[in-house]
Image (cartoon, rainbow, N blue to C red):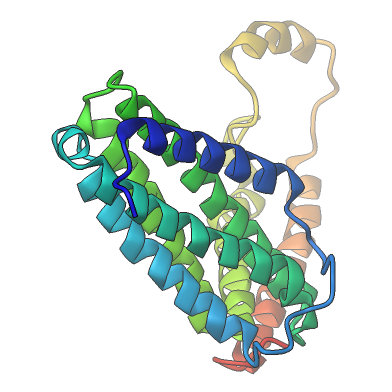
Length: 260
């Protein structure tokens, strides 16, 4: 087999770039054809593919260093070819086999969303590699940043698959509890003593509105702060019950599930 030239590499890069663009635009959220029955555990296979993509990305980052690329385009060609074949496996598995796995819709959607982020970072680095092959970009920063993005997306996907549906649900609940806690203490403080805080205790207004509000305040009737406090404290109790309910629900979620 004859050695590949920089021109051959450029053609392969263009084809790969077009393919990643197409996959991003047409990534299926449901199974588009009969799944490959030879794959017994699609989620385990997906984890293996993601790990392989991360390893191959590391190799791409080294080989596509401008100095290395000009000296040995043949190695860059074969490395990119293997990388593109792995990405094809990723797209095929997600589009054709993921739907056959008995997992929750939440877990399924999170996987497909994470895969799309990974494909997006792969498409971005393909743009950078094209510029390097054309000798229009000798800056290592863009290439290394591209490699880093793929690593990050691979790590996130591997963590998602390792944690399973139970781990995902637990993280979602923790996030919601965190959002609730962020505003609850301040709301409770305001509800117990509204006179100690200004008319915008939670910082919803901006400076541009202040002048207009000063004029409007002259026309407003006085506010019964005791009545406001009583009403707000009712909601403090309700929110506390919601927090307890969410916290107890989080404890009931298994630490690891099969995704169902």
